[in-house]
Image (tube, rainbow, N blue to C red):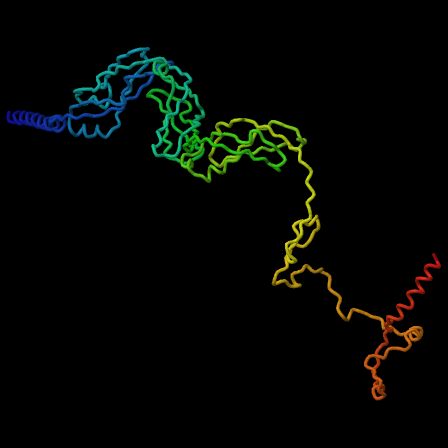
Length: 425
């Protein structure tokens, strides 16, 4: 009996111990305090029929409020939870799709308190595409800016858009927005600009090139200019000889006299225009940099080549003094130098050849002949000779020169020569 009683007590003790252990395990797993938290689920879509596009109602994520043990919820937050929405049953128009997040394996151990949103209302439309033009919209330049924008060009100027039919049909054009103040300088510019599109709309190509020009602000000016002849103006007659022109010049140069004086009107008569002939020509307007011609009146002029009279023969005009040159040179190429107080032979343009030197002159000595002695009577004494006998002893002798005929010799020979000439005649 005693052994039977001990066995019974052991069985009861084992049952109680198992109950305590089970209770402890239950307490460890389930018996702790439950907490509530909110987790985010990323939404993915699949199975959309071809030819349809969802225009409205798409959600990128869902918010789910859960209740469960803190330990399990702590592990749940570290996971990337994804909820997939099946769109295979979607039709054109409005579609309500309930969300069953409880089917997710990661959420089954928890109590789902709330799902936000609880369902998706999708607006499906037919997918279509069309070609639309682009329009440039630029930010305005400052009021004090010296430039104005012109010649805006978009390349390409048309693009293809694709999306829901209702949105695509509602678009007449797409805007290209650009700020020209980023590069405010005179001249031509270009920039690549993104095309602005509404949501759900795809554009091809997504970028266009904007070309534009920044010009100086211009102001109109009216001028009256004399027509100038390209050549000898004395040979031609211009009618009318004054032309009125209207120019557009930069605003900051309107009052610049030197800038406006650079405006010229020139006409170039043809070479083959004969004397007395007349022709109509369009004048050439020469403008300074930055100026533009708007109007010219008249647009053409009559050019006549004159008949030039013969040049009169100039009369002799004597010099005012011995130290001045005559007014009329009669074509003689006289020197233009003038005799002044400081005149020197060095001022004359001497020939470049070397002048002969005294040693270069060779003079043959003259020897008196017997005939000369008879005619003169006696020879002239030599240079340096004397009547004194003492002087005759000098050994230095000079060449004898021919005797100079006397006046009597000339008068005696003259009649005889005249008579002889008469006899010959």
